[in-house]
Amino acid sequence: SLDPPFTPAQVGSPAAANETTKGSVASAALVPDFRGARGAMQPMDIQGGGAAGRRDEELDAMENERMLNTADGPPSPTRRVAAQTTEAKGVANLALCFIGLQASYLTWGIMQEKIMTTQFEPTPLVPDGIFPSATFCVFSNRFLAIIVATLLTLKTHGTMKLAAPLWYFSPCALSNTISSWGQYAALKYVSFPLQVLFKSAKVIPVMLMGKVINKAQYSVSDYLEAVVITCGVATFSLSKSSAGAADQTETKTFGFMMLTAYICSDAFTSQWQDKIYKAYPKQIDSYQMMFGVNCSAILFTIGALVISMEIPPVVEFLTYNPTALLYNIITAITSATGQLFIFYTIKSYGPVVFTIIMTTRQMISMVLSTILFGHALTMGSCFGAALVFGAVFYRIHRKRLEKRARSAR
Image (cartoon, rainbow, N blue to C red):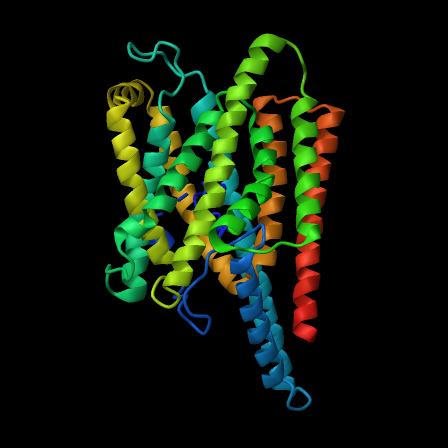
């Protein structure tokens, strides 16, 4: 999914979550115990909202306490050296977060596009040579995510017992599964750059789901930014070449349906995760959320694979095309490592820094996809992309100013 399945529920999600689970034992060692002064991790919301607001307030309180603790007299040479060392470590850690997130999700995006758009060797059951199952891609990501979440939960809590019953995770697990499936399936019909930009419009369903599920309130600025982002996505998509209009319209319509299912389901995922965190404010943290959601989600994906009878063609296809299996393994690993960097970045630097890094990643993803897969971008497409990213960066800046204003009061 978030992107990855937790968008942060996951950004927009806590974040993190609405793509949202999107590892190995070695990966688990990258993340320290997050149960410190801030308590259980809350869902990540790149688009803003209640969860991100609470995290901003927590970060403000911690920063104020730090300033008070260091304001009792002029710094001694020893304290200055210690401060410089701490600052250097902070810069190094931030660089690690930036590189880790970019490497994980840029690789994840490229592998995702390769899986769904590469013409592999045809097989008796898959004569067109196109990977036959977006559901299997979701399954492979969830399978590894469960392993990582299990290791992290055991390391952090020493037990796999959850305060919330497993069925309570089912609604967001189902929406997370639909979201991830739509993200993979859409790549057969629309370009990756359009998909990346379409994700930015997730702010609209996030706001709608927030009002319906959590009774959230939004400002006029939130709605205006949503309108600008929507206009940018529309401009980008309508500026593509009109060659082969009939077929292109039909395939694009189905692709847009998949993308709409993706962003709406992802928005529901993050809001339902927020609902779980509110119901169990001290008993559920991000690792347990990751475990609970993925356990329920993998049951949905297995059921879908069985009902759709996609297991035989997938097994045959992977036997004929081991490269496709390698691509699936890489997407699963980078999805898991990406989630670890998400948790660590938000815990260490807050949602604003995380949002900037991930927005930058989206821009780089578009450029890489255009270069590697030959997608053509017209002037209108570039203008639409500029509208979207301009609105997103303005939103980040506005949220930062609001945070400072709250701190000053």
